[in-house]
Length: 371
Length: 221
Image (cartoon, rainbow over all chains, first blue to last red; front, side):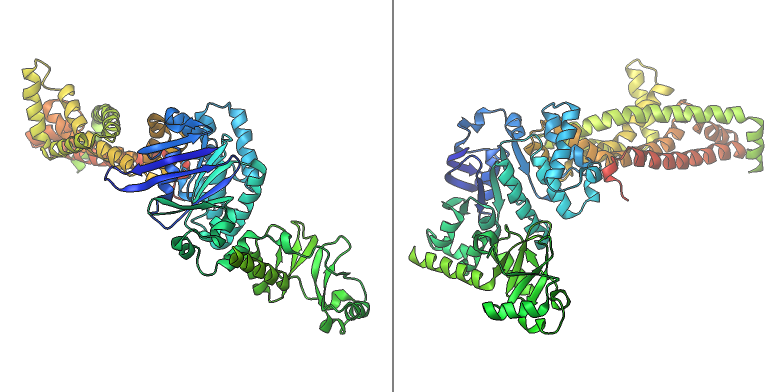
């Protein structure tokens, strides 16, 4: 648990970067520090591991005043991930990941095992990458190694400073999803700095919105969107908050998990009759193992012998953990008003329809009005 | 030219002797200079030492502007007033260390000062002490620039060591000085050409060494 109590940070030149900020982050929670640049979010984070000295107030880590802990000791027990440039270029991937374990004096075999484990955890093949240098990796891979390094000595707390800031949007979304999955497993207490409201809503259990050094609102993402405390929050959240609210909902919450399916080898004629009988205009085509193959719609079914001959190819798919606004954009780019939801191995688990998204949107909007 | 060739054929052992002397002076001087230069360069990058750094670098620059001949002369006076041996190996080494110092000192200082602040913050943020930060992050990242300074220093020393022959240090300056005194063109050519070749060879060798000691991840592919 991290507790900030009236924390103020004044720079040597007299600038008050952080003014009397107080909040608590529960164990296992991911708290996003959000705000425009210069709002003091990074300063606040760096006061936790004392990279920036606290001028007034206290920060408690598991009940201990952080100024009473030796600063190097403190930092070795708090994982620290910064933007991708933070990897040491003269060290290999494994040497980078082993930085804190080396400082803590772990035996070599243990360190090596840990580095391999962590690399696999962040989705990289340890055999292939462990002895590579950062310059040999892509931006996304460096970012993954950065996260692995922060987890090096298995610290209970992580500080992450725009960890996915410097990469392309597509990789970014993937890294966010993967990181959330990892967090479900490792349950660290995390302080995550970003200026991106979408990222904040998607990643945070709690969001601390800051402005001009002050904490404006500390709340759940939903409350930040629908119960903005003042005009600043409202403006920061933006007029399209209903759309942003789609970030709070995942495909699994609104998908139809027993969609009408048809086997690829079935007769097209039979499928057509069934659709007419049941009054539906599409069927999901699967193979015998339940793998998603494509779509069959009524108009095309008349023209072939089996479903396989006339089905449309699969286009985009989503997973159960895709957030709704990403699902929506996948749907728009595939020009269908349905999206197949599949497992990692392409097994069909459900279908997300445009209607379901619309329904979720209107519910969000109502919730916003009623509160 | 022919005379120089003739001389070489008749006295190869002399050339070998001068060359060895020359190399010996160069490497002793550069060896001392690298230890002093890196140590001093690292020291003045420390917190709150900006004033010392300015003074040290300024002093080193001034030393560089003193002509080598004048410095040898000054050193002779200084050493003899201290009751030390004022000609030969010792004053030559002292003068050469002073000259070789500057490129090493300046490059060490600059390289360490210019290590990406993000690297330093990453190191600190993970709990490295100042010492660990220096040894594990700053110095390895500074190696290529420090090595470039050492390379400059060695080539510079090879050239200046020639003049040290005037105060009796030996080396490839000896045939040149002797040739000038006795109007022996062959000796001047033997000395001059040998110093030039030695300089070029050492420079080439050092560029290999530079590549070799540069941390692998920093090498340009």
